[in-house]
Image (tube, rainbow, N blue to C red; front, side, top):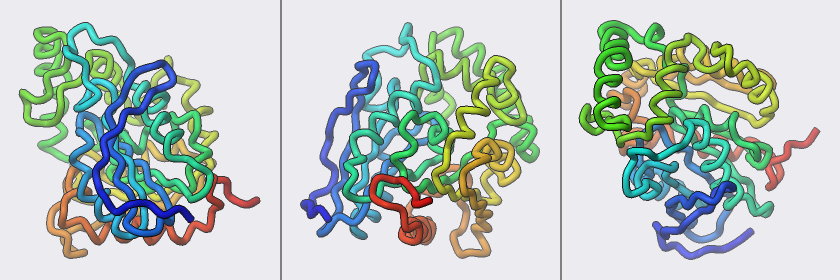
Length: 298
């Protein structure tokens, strides 16, 4: 095993296959490194939000890499207006660069995904390098899976408010709504379209090939969703993760109040009071028995 320094939070730059430069932070393991984790962020959530989890895992022997997708946080250009990209670039290019950087073949590499980070697993051209993936709050995004009044609120946002704001700004000004970082126009257009389908892009006739893309994933997965996550209830998760039809898949429904976690919602998975969930995820990684390159024995 490798031994690394205990210092936390080393900034670095990743280079995506298309040449885009991405801001990232390496959180080295304390003492002997036993495994590595790449964190797949949620849409519009900067990498700093995952710092506490990274430090928690680092204290338990994991080296953790957090990163910002292009257009967000430290990977944002000077102006989002006129910035051209597609939503899927975050998985096929950006998170793929993080996996390539961390997969050294000496220790196992895992993915911890939040919301879109759970979508990104299936988009990775190098997902076979992962020994396991623990996903929090992944869902299909369709307003119909949400309870009232959240269902109506999200429908109005997609169909009334956001089209007007985005036309005015030239990008999705999510900060104005207090919901997250501003997003490139390409992300907005794709996201809005796919959230109009009950099974996200799997229902989009223009994306019919995605069923075969996701069917290639063989990485063991846990998909954990809180029952109070209004944006990604377990039924919304199930509408999406069925796409991982050839991967070993475990569904975990979190009853936050009954488990002493208080309220989780869509963002609480990575707040301080969710530490028991982090411990659970790391313990599951420890049971996988995959070889360091992420290839499971036949």
